Structure formats: C-alpha cells, structure tokens
Image (cartoon, rainbow, N blue to C red; front, side):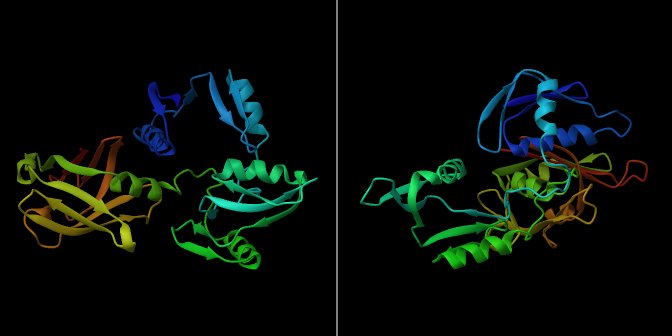
Length: 286
C-alpha cells in the first residue's frame, strides 16, 4: 500500500482500482491546484521485478526519468497474456534427460527467460491458452500459433501509455459497479425524499456474457433492467440505468453524472437545483 495526499486529503492506495479515488479528489473542485504528494518511504517494482526502497521524491524522480516517455514504444505486450500455469521442457548443460519447468506467473516467466543460457534446449509444452484484453481466451497448439497471436495483439488495444489517465475509467467504473451488491441509501427528487420506495431491495450490476443486466431483489419481487456506461465524453462518464416502465424503478431511468465514488459508495445526480429538477441517487455497497 501507498499513501498519497491530494489537496490535503490522505488517500490509501492498495490496488489499481483505488486510483479512481485520486481522480475523484482531483475532479471534486475546478478551481484548485490538484497537488499530489507521496508519503515516503515506498517500494517500487522495476521491469525485472526487482523491488527498490525509495526514501524521498528525488530518488523516486530519478527512476521515473528512466522510464519511456508518453506514448513511446515499450517492450511489453499488454493486450494479451498467458493463462498460467504454463510448462517448458528443458535440457540443461551436462544433462542427458530433459526436465519440466512449471511457470506460475509473469515474474517467474521473466526470470526463466533471463536465464535461458542455462539450457541447451527449451520447448513449450503445448497446448496452453492466452487471454486477450477483452477477456477472450485463445487456445495455442504450436509455436506458429503463439507467434501469430502475439504479433496480432501488439496493436489490439490502448495500452494506456499516455498521460490521459481517463482512458481506462470505463473499465475501472465497470469493475467497481459489478463487484458486490448495492442498496439505495438515498434517492431525492426536487428536494423530496423517495428513498423508502426502494427499501429492502438489493441491486446487482452484471456484465457477464457481453450483456449489461441489473436487478433489484427484495426476496419477494425481482425486478430486472439494463445498465451501461456512456463514454461520449471520456472526462465525464455517465452511468445509464434503464428499468423500462417498471414503477417506481422507472424513476431511475437516467444518464447519471457521477459526483462521488468511494470504496463502498456511489453518488449520482442529474438536473439542477436552479431548475427544480435535481435528482440525487446514492448507492451503498453491502
């Protein structure tokens, strides 16, 4: 974990999903300086999986300066990956019988490749599978198939190597919504509270099988609908809810602006207080 301070707010980063909390702090006000400070010491992991303790910003910045610049080509292919474990049949020097080596993750694969000089011969144990950035699995049965899939994947997706950190927000937001169940903690329309209309209902967002289904279930009644993320403006993603004409859930059928997203809370709004049509919808994770 790493602690950062954004506009005097301390944020604990434990996974990449927590980057969204930093973005939320940046976007909360439009007239501030958006200053981020890292609380040292921290540890960083280099490309060869070496871990380095960093005591101050100056040392950290030295490592940053050695990284490739914005949109410069790098050596990794992020649009496809191995589904581990995979195995290699290897013949070491001064050995007469080959040995099987099992690789469990990217780190072990890097270290194995880095030490190929230890072996006379190395062969993949086929078949195994690859997984593409969109979740599609590909079976690999020979070296030609492996080479073709890796070469085709080089430009298959945006590897997020630029400085526009908004271009992966859709994936983070979708993962945030589909991770667990939710209840409506607040629903207000034109200063009138309608939260009790949804008491007892547990909401679930699903994105399996390429469908974006959602449901509300109180143990007696199951209501279903659809949800999506509107990416028309990448800097202002919208959560789209559609329960068709099912009362009172049809009141939630809007393209909602995100005003707050925390570990267990998502606050949405649409309309304006000036026009008297402001809606506020707050989900809380169970």
